Length: 605
Image 1: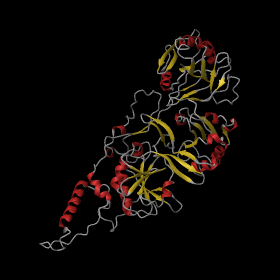
Image 2: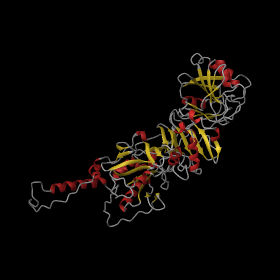
Image 3: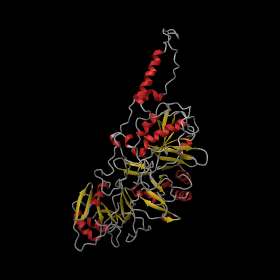
């Protein structure tokens, strides 16, 4: 959250208090509010040969008191200081950071603008108005930087990020004329890299400022939720103008479902760069208790579900393939890249839109399914394939898989079948969808004008050719029916003549040998397994109103509630699997950590 307040400079020498918090020193005026400074100090990454001093502001009036308080640590224990204070080298005249360096006789690293502390402890100099900078800085106003101050020497300009990523120096090669507003778009420097979006005010608490920087990959985030998609030419022009060394480390990331109006983001970017480009399926965010995950962002800017296809590799004029992925569940044996075995005949394939469940030996219509774009509102599970004979899926195995998905994926689940699927397939898929999410199924259309996924509202009536059991994934009395089937099979074996007994030779007019047929694989083993899958304790995140220990009060928590109305739209932040289908009542938790504060020059310590 953003905090900003102003106080007048004290008439008498400031009474500073410095104490150790973790591996940092926190300096604050006695009686002042030190909560934000302590929260930042707990996150700032440690440096081997430098001590970090965290305070909300530093003016020339506070330098004498700070010098006195730092004597026990500097230079006795440390000979270098990182001053985590907004605008310490920003004031007119002699910067306070230079006074501190001269007074302590050590090196001081300070920022010339607002500071952002990201959830992983990295720091970013967000902005500066350009007044009072050292004369060596010839950059336009708005691009802040770290500076190195040493006794008796000129200040030295550093990068904007700490720790400094490998691509920082390549980003500095971009001409200033390409950054900022121009041509109907804005190219903004953000912690994770660059952000291309439409002009307009940016909230200091925007989710883009919670995306952590990667030491090797520079991100180009395109568009933002709720705004008009960008034109392909605007994206193509920026990608082509980037330095070659930066393009080698570039990874594209959509901010919203439809970042580009007339094409796919990876297709446009790879053609402009004339090389294979990696494209994330969402924004990498820090989730409470779960580390960093790529999360799809909905149209309202709220984090949605975590895609199983984390990153795609787009080739120029050659389509995409899944480059990085996560398994949708445990106990699934791998068959190949992004492919897992469901049983001996069916497999689960990770695709951009979600999952594709199909037979192992058939890949008819694979392009239509693999090219489905991701929807932040829905985790799409396609069962079967278009343009292929529709074998009866192992619905019980499918249901077990869907119930074992992460809570955020279950809350946004939708099942889709091909538009040429038979009545049996449609009715069985509808029963699964209704039982798990109380929603409707979708059809995958590969012909005609309306291609892609469309909702399907009317179920076909059962015809005479449909068997009574109809492959029902939820029979009324499964245990009784399984036992009856097993006893019937044993009785048939008992009445079958042995190999050395001719047909009809037994007394009492034995019935003829029954016409035994092989039992499908899913019927051979499913009855011996557990009926319900008990969720592990790790899948039970904290309640929506609770706060994990050690989390600063400034963090923003976003969680999907557990109880929903039947009319809730699948995939919205009100949609979750019903409690009866989730033993233990797990919640879908996609709470994200954000920077606790944005410090500006003049804010209260």
